[in-house]
Image (tube, rainbow, N blue to C red; front, top):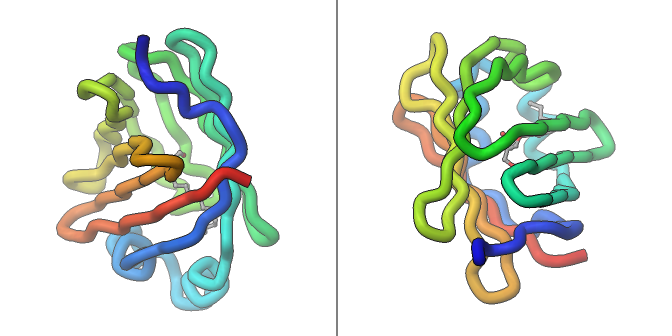
Length: 134
Ligand code: VLZ
């Protein structure tokens, strides 16, 4: 039985989001707004099918995927660069590799205690976020 990420999660810590956004080439004005945000994630997990809806007062981002099936991701409202994304299980961690123009791009989700963890990486930058159940 894999872990169940389903639920509504609120951001409580956000380490080096600035570095991650810089690596993605997000402009100054957008970064200033984005780093103040406290996004919420609504995750639905149904077998191998996932949807991760990241919402905030500024922008929303919806990601839908199936484990092991590569898909085109448009990153609309983020850096708007298209990439090929693939999400797989690494034990109880959900690992996404985003292949495209940016090197070493991807993210990992896992649950530790009652908290949802997310590590976002791009080039040499790592952003570490922690979410708590709403
Ligand atoms: O998350 O890749 O949970 O997509 C931030 C919206 C969304 C705020 C970040 C606006 C999505 C920021 C990060 C403007 C630059 C991400 C995945 C893992 C699912």
